[in-house]
Length: 228
Image 1 (cartoon, rainbow, N blue to C red):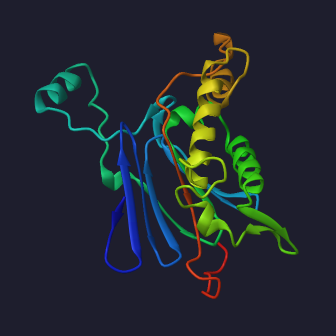
Image 2 (cartoon, one colour):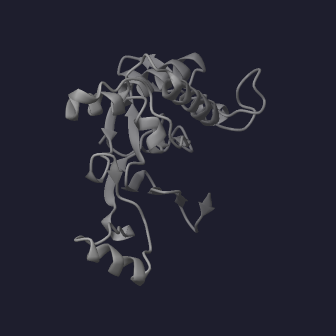
């Protein structure tokens, strides 16, 4: 986590694909490259889900530096190598509101669990831990969020904050789904759609990494940006 002067906070992470986040006041600027991505959840609904970037099925964009010799060898066989750069990333802008949840994850999560399944996990946890409460406007962020999102803010779980608990639960469910040979996740369903002759079923083992961000209003009297 990198704290910059003023009300700006930035986060970045890179593995074989990359996602990054920068927030200023209540505006969230996100970018994703490849098949890592994020979803924006508000009021018990998925408000946005990023789309994976692929050259072809199961061939995601990846940051790479290819040696000149390898590029020449690749062209000998009739095609140049696939090479992607930060400028190829998808950039999005979202308005954040008190109680909003952003789930950033690698492809090992999205291959095995859908956005709606993750919404279910987030909804159960946020209501169970009083992060969301029901109002005449529907499900909204509670006044207890500031405490819940601090380390030790969860009763009986001194090592967890609400967002870390969410990340652990989503990670655990994605890992279990990846090992389940009887449950078809998003990847298996896409294989079946494209290649019905393959008889592909079950989860897909892959890198699983999850980061959860919960938007918390600094002051109850502070204005909140309009809904996106």
